[in-house]
Image 1 (spheres, rainbow, N blue to C red):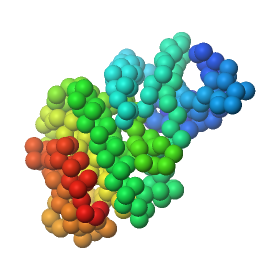
Image 2: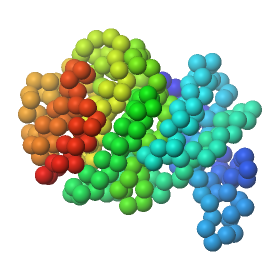
Image 3: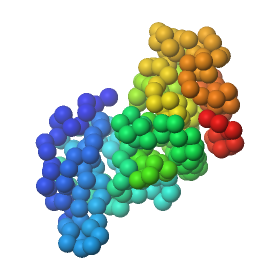
Length: 290
């Protein structure tokens, strides 16, 4: 995958784009772009200035398939943007050097920072349950359009101010294909065995089922504040322990038996036996304790 975009893009702070958006500060970066907080200048002196998040994606140096990937990301984001669990996209500007996506600014930042830096969900079962169910709802709606995200992870999920609602962002690896045969793309911690090409071999797989696996890892993150393993392969000792011991998740994580049972189904090695999203939602909503 490409290197982090922040390493090759000069600072854009202060730049004015489109209909008068000024880029104020860098919020984050990924493989293909950087995200800035921006203000709509015509509202700067009003009581309620309009702030947006603007994702800048450079064109220079990209190969044809990488440019096509960016265009596909924009297409998939626009397709899903009317759904309440997806970050709103307000506009797209196509210049000689950059694509700019004007996005909703989520006050809570991303889920990674809420889990690891703020510890917002620590010892707060009610908030974990509410927020995670909003994420499952968002994925259900996305899948209903025929689109799989393929890179679900806390860094790609944005949060409202109180942490109770989660929003999908970054559709750079999304796909509308029923089966894919691309392996090793994404983030190892959240990657399913079939997406990594390990354990069950490199066979075409359903990317929507792979999204369900990622949701299981995210739930573990939210409850425990840590990851269960590094990559889903036998050489990872923690993943190997998971493969060998049906009780591994319950014994190694601060989770209830109910959630451990649900996670075993969510993280089924055979994707055909993985839990359905509707059942995952119901089981977490009905869990006596997390």
